[in-house]
Each structure stands twice: as C-alpha cells, then as structure tokens.
Image (cartoon, rainbow, N blue to C red):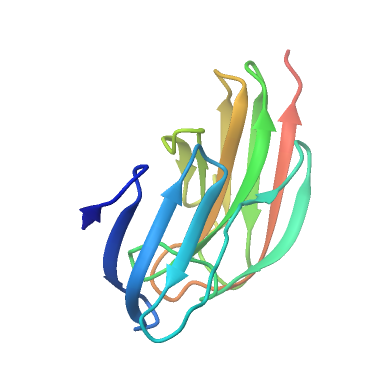
Length: 162
C-alpha cells in the first residue's frame, strides 16, 4: 500500500472474483463512499453510494455476489438513513434464504449496534437502538457465512417515546 495525494491510497488487491488490479478507494464521511476500480485488464469505473431509506421505511431487495465484499468471503449491501438524536428505532431484517445479519454504523464507520439472530429464535435479525447524535447512518445488510445471498426484507421503524 502506498500513499499518493489527498489521502488517496493505491492498493494491489486480489478480489473475491479473482480479478487482480490496482484499486483507488477514496472515502469521505459515510454514507458517501466512492470506489474507483482500475484493474490491469480493464478500465471500468464503479461509483458506490449506499441506497437511501427513510425512517419508517421498508425495502425488499436481494443480496448477491455483485454487492460489497466483506473480506470474510461474504457480501453486504448498505442503506443510508438520516437519524436524529433521541430517535429510538427498530431495524428488522428478514430472509428466507440466508442467515441475516444487520449492522448500524455511524458517519465515522463505527458500529453502533449489530444483531445476528433475533429474539424469536430464527436466523432473522432485529436491532433496537437509541440514537445519540443527529446525522447520517448506514444500515448494513449481510449474511452470516460465505455463501449468504438471496432475497430479504429490511424494515426500519421509529419507536414512540413513552
């Protein structure tokens, strides 16, 4: 790994799909991350930004090997959400095809909360948390294990204060 300018690092990587090349990862504050791929064998450019989801929103989507490699052999899909200090939220991730894992990250990429198996004894995930700081957050959807892929439903609910 070598540093160039403006905190841009060039890494020589072997990707999950065995494509070797030189990659420039230019990361700004989450949830805006730009990934530019310039493999030695092709000149393809990818720009990545998490999919926006509203508070009290629901998404039906699919996790596949075209999503973000986790480094553990699996893949993840990210959703950005704007939350306010004091918000109490429930993040419900269900899938009939893989063991769902949900993670909430703050704008610095720090894990705020993570859940693998929900309280109902299934492999679905349910995460409750209270937000301390107003800002952009990322909800990361991934499966447990290397071969996790398939359809899922992600539901975010804002809970009422009592």
